[in-house]
Length: 237
View 1 (cartoon, rainbow, N blue to C red):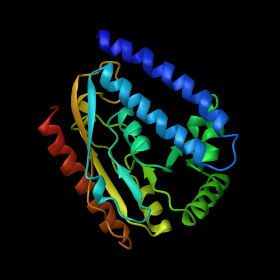
View 2: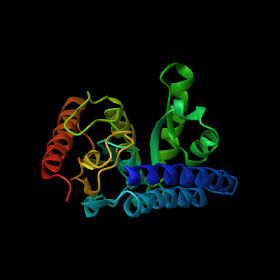
View 3: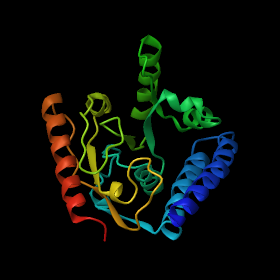
């Protein structure tokens, strides 16, 4: 519990420092300085997670990523798997909920990064904002991250996969790279307690572009859930 408490303090200190730093980087021309700051933030959190909480994260299958930009559809068991994504993938875009705008400084950072911001309320304005983001992504070589369940899931838990991942995959006409994990065994969702050990985040074989919705959704869910279940059974090392 002492290590978990120490990491809790370090987490918020690191977040506060990088929130201010990235706000300043967002003022600079272009997106690269801010993207580098975000990537460094993810790396700093992983270092703190390892040295303070005793949780290391092995990344497997990164060589499976397509040479072209892809849609990254990931299992989401923990805040920690987000740190893996932003530290491992440079110039990453992502899908975020508009609730994040309630946090100080976050709105400016999201806008500069070109995040696809979804509104729970929907409506014409929300659709127009999403379509504008998609138009920008079509012209850029950036992977885009989405959590298809839309929720954090405890190890062994599964939520219904939302169709937004297919709309993104179809609209961009890109491969989709599924991602499985067992990180929830070390850091379960938003839990305070951390369990020391080596967890895994694994990139799986890409799904080629062009599949119809039902076939795509079935294949994506089967791949992510089967491999995640296997990693959970494998446990922490």
